Length: 280
Image (tube, rainbow, N blue to C red; front, side):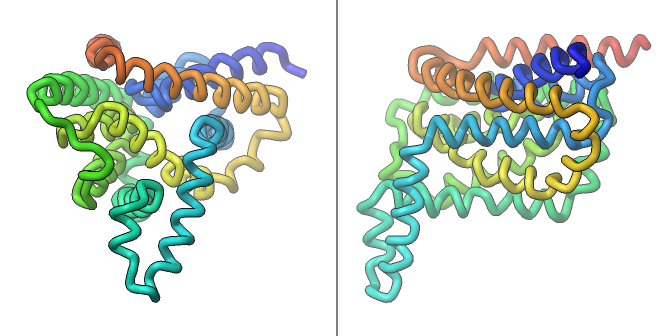
């Protein structure tokens, strides 16, 4: 058993779990970690880490997910009774379930039709640095706009258009450096959603996105896992634990403070990357 690889696996797992739900782009940080460590030259390890992140969000929102699943199937029963629209309006979990499905469409289409384009960006460190700076501006701008909106939109007033816009933001976040949580939460704040609702919807919206990406890449797990089983397991556990803590932290921050510190972080890291790429 290679202790060094296990330690590297834990470190990268911690980074993945934290940055998946903190608005600083997990894909960018995975690119940086792989460049620094030379670990996991294929997608197998990244896939395992994303499954760990998926476990984190499933654990945190388990009760919501159960209620949403029950509400979804209940809403299907409303269709023949002509009660579908009424049910959506009156039951928040029915509304959430359908809005998550609708909001997942843009990322699904982008993943299918622009897969090669997005994959090419992962080898372009300059692009990753540039996109991190863009993420910083999204976070900064959304906070400034949100502060000027006196009456926030709650789940009851949330529309299909809102879910599609947040879903489109998630689609752009397939690019490394564009934070998925940062883009979707920022979109919600720009739309005037309640801060906690923007974050909650963002995290729930991540479930089909992470699950879909993992299913697409699941075949890659067979490559390399037999060689680095310990590192893969350690990375998975680290990603799940740190992801759970990151969700808890983000929901606390979005409620009590703001996201400007993450904007500054993205600007600093993105700027350093661009400077280093221009020098070396």
